[in-house]
Image 1: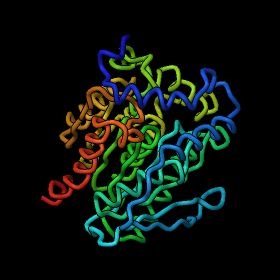
Image 2: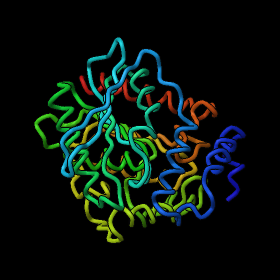
Image 3: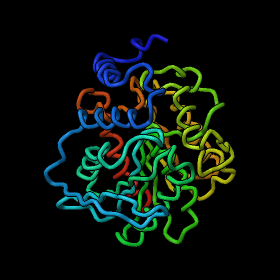
Image 4: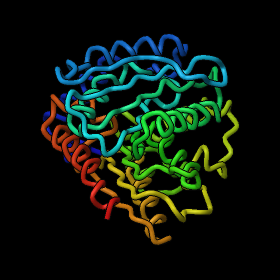
Length: 311
């Protein structure tokens, strides 16, 4: 597919800049080298933290010991809600530093406290390790912050947020909403963009297969809703949901299918496909007008869900 028909010069420049960090054989490199490249790329793209946002890093008690988290707070916070945020990276890359600027800007733009979670990564910690860490973080923020909790995640983190939403809806204080950004929700074999954009820039369908197998020690259970939220037979009672996807991304159709299932069960769900964008575009929000506009829409959606929830 000729992606120059879909993408403007700024997005193409962002893709070239991202690809400059990764050799063609990067998926075959040792995991430590992959993480070194990813962390370096994240640092180069990192934006300065807003002056009115502070953060503190500490640890919760996790199954394997310390579970690092980082809490962001704006000088004049909006105390109506808090955000529990999960980073991307295919469940094998990333951490508190790789998405620090995105969390800080989310806090600044929304006013909500943001708790970022350094969940355990595969292949050292196979599924359901990341899901278990997500549950621990949700229990902590619900109990300690004492405000309604909204779930947010990018890419792999969007998958994790959705899996948590399915699990936590039955708790005494369930999440009040979820805002998912280019998430993996449905698994392979659902057609749509997973076919038409199987070879999209920055993320291909083959990459998704590698990440899934690394996450599960090469033994994925496609019926496990802690792994693939779309596999859950029960979509009742999920919180209001907004899913933002990139048009040129094999995961775009996941947002459509997932939101349709929620609406079929009487829930509130909206799918927004951002035209002319690619997976991971949040990193390009200062380089691309399209990315910057979408980031603003995501921030507005987070805040805009509260009146709907309160009604």
